[in-house]
Length: 553
View 1 (tube, one colour):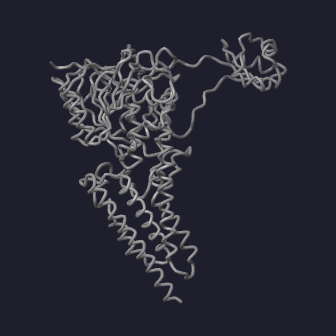
View 2: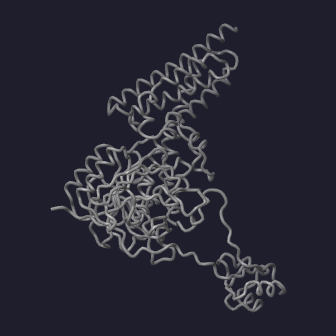
View 3: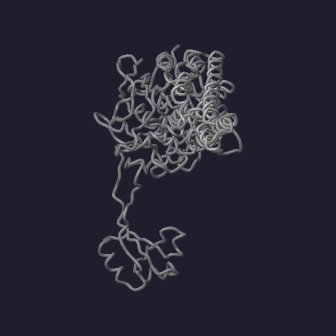
């Protein structure tokens, strides 16, 4: 018997986001030390309140008034008033410039801005298996693949429901485009596969086929914001995806009771529960054994507590707040895309970071409600950059320094040693700390923050950048041959080769880079051999330096 899977977005969806004008507020700055009772008596405003409890020291208060202009003139003329004026709304300049970003508590909660500075998911494909995805206005700059539909009678991957487009927006909404809202991984590629109808439900073979198609199309992450009863054909498809090295993320369910829905309950799937703005389990969220993570799913009982994204609305689009574990799941999928982009496609490493760095909630350690904790992308990236990449930088610098010690005793030896050490550290680890600084994202800083070996990933995209040609010593050796003999660039090239050798050998020993078309041991062997070739190239460059020094002496 075919199993019917239904969407997990519970509760009525709201209409276009209502943004009422702020109340007419007057802010009053009184002499320091004025009490609140004195302030009320002096201004004749009985509803006057401190702007914040900490504002009492500076006697900064405000009140809602009927005519802010008239009250401004009246209060400003009173003795003991340092300043009085209407409340002005100020906006953050810089990145992002999306006007509704301040409504997205969920992105700030998980540290999405750090992900924007760490590549924003560039080169990673995320399959959204849902009701389809329509390129609404705020997805105009997002890369969306052609997609496919397995839903009978609904050809094409356009969204007739709104659920799938909302999910895709959380993952990769066009960001810093001056419109609407932001997404977690705006440079990721969305693969829309329709397996749920416009009514919000789908048959198990549709969903199983969609999972198989996502793997065939090269998706590194699959988002399943859907659930229902157990289906063996879906279980088989999910296992095939996991065996292919795909991260599968699924919604825990919206029953509000213990017990996960399927496919979230399947082994290996990252099952996600939902929390509200207060980081408490949302009342609708299912929970139980097997929960991996919690993530913002919204709680519309709280003001602006839903998850706001752009989605279809009749013949147009609207910014709508949804809630559900369906909304929590794409937070994890988007975060996974960012980590995979930043770590060179290391699926096991990305999964480990997601779980190990989650903000522990509820009972200490993993528990049935929050799993390992609430998703914390900033913490995941901090761990990646400050542990893994910093270690690579240290290894690359040490390898170059060791190589520099073989460079003889000729003139400029100390300067060459410094140049080689710095070049080795940068080649192996990049300026790893850049994404942690509060700077606007830039393409150049994204490249500079990555190890040299991962640069093609930010430009070409996965999996093509991991082809054996780019994952080889060919280009470093060519640079050594052309530039190694030069006095100025020779030490730079030699140090960079030493750093690349350290990264190649580290990847061969510990994994983390899967060479395209060379699975398992073959890929590791390839990396190790090319690491040795890079080291030989660096030694050759130093040998040329020693010969030149002898000749000059």
